Length: 303
View 1 (cartoon, rainbow, N blue to C red):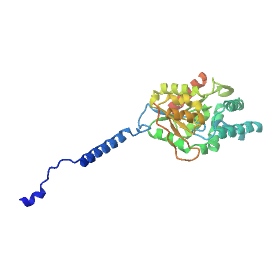
View 2: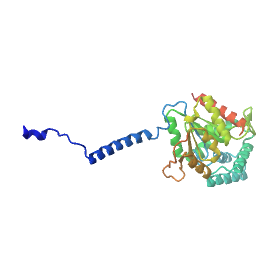
View 3: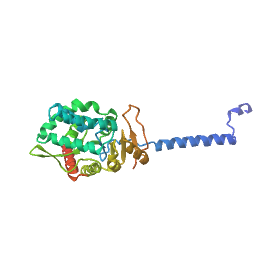
View 4: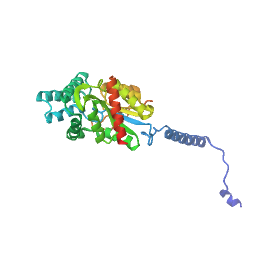
């Protein structure tokens, strides 16, 4: 039987090296488990009906300004003279080169647009807007931003455009992109005819945040679970309102703010792979009310 002794396991005391090996193995296992638990949670969360996404339009979803593209389409249809087109062209060139919303240029563009549509039927402009989208806007949609919106839709969440552009234009774009609806600036009309005035003020800056807040209340949304996307520092109030703010193709002020606040950043202007900066951080009354009401009405019609 002594010859079979080698088959019997022997008790050996642990050496210093075996203790070290065991501790190292346990530490590696613990770290692996910790990395899994610390991994960023799934976003957007599938099936979260109290979450939604809000997208700025100009330079966020679409390259350039929707109002300028709309003006170009109206000129083609002889709504105004060549001198007006030159002004629109200059404003658009400035917007594309500067990549920011200049208040003076934007105000001039709005005043021009209002004077142009005065006396025209609302239904006429909506029909023309469909044509102008196909002619000038469809090819300017940023694929990267469109994919972000689609991710929310695929997760069963609602997606809204929030823009200072006329609500009629915003609704056309939202419908073509299969989004839920749009909040936008409301132009006054009487008997279905534009008066050349606004209802309140443009949906811009703090007014966007108020519109999102009002829509969230009407739709029973939890803003801490919602996301917002914009390129402009003017939309910091809207971005700060939600639990998941994103800076998309940001201007310099928004980029700086996003870094300071540890917000996510995506830049599709150069075609480079989207960069991640940090993780998500926890106006005119008439325009806000009108834009919100129009968006809610559109959403309910789609149900």
